[in-house]
Image 1 (tube, rainbow, N blue to C red):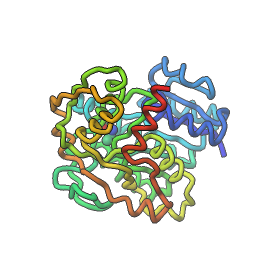
Image 2 (cartoon, protein in one colour):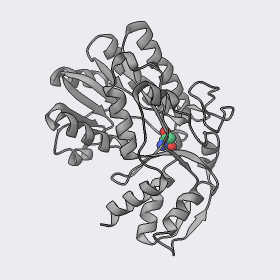
Image 3 (cartoon, helix red, strand yellow):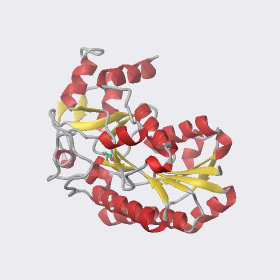
Image 4 (cartoon, rainbow, N blue to C red):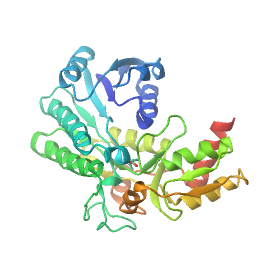
Length: 312
Ligand code: AKB
């Protein structure tokens, strides 16, 4: 096996996935890349390179230099921030994916991981227990780019045999890095407010259910999918994966058990409309059948684990 290159390694998912890949395969195997030079500080255990994913020549140069065989292409602009600059979001999310897929087609890399999202679903999607295959009418440019990206992944697999694998992540909740630009990020930020004794201003309505997943489960799902034998992967667009669903009111009530004086006020903004177009819960039977996916954390176990780590 050659080296593993991760784009967007300094981000919320990238920071933890890069560390998990280094634990599994050794730091010497890992090339962490990010557009932000300051991300370097996180990666004293592996190689770090600055990479703007729109700079295809630089990507090819790094792949040749380090003899990379696998790319985890995580760099993307997320749902909330994407709405502020739709055309650039489309360009970054799509052009960078197509560059990576082309490298797979050319035989320069053997395996690709690319994250999709519950943002591919929309207002006409069944909201409860959303099936793998159903109406998909995303309302954000991020969701449109993820849906188009899924179709490109399936296309490159079917036409050119590119081994590309993908998951439709729910909202990811971790405590190690700040979240950036998503609609589900309130569920990350609420923990710090509770610990610091601040009133939390929630940008979603109290009863807005969304599918969520604790970061260790997201990392496990990603590693399991990438390790699965090729013949077990029956979905080459992107797999539904799910763990828990909760509303702001429910996570707030959970935190009240630890911080009885914790206060919240609801001030829904444009992100409420985005959240309302996404599912409440996800049916991930195919992932469970194909590569034995199982989550470990429900909401209470997740909250306890986060608070244990942040306060001890
Ligand atoms: C976002 O909120 O944009 C992301 C996602 C669900 O893909 N966390």
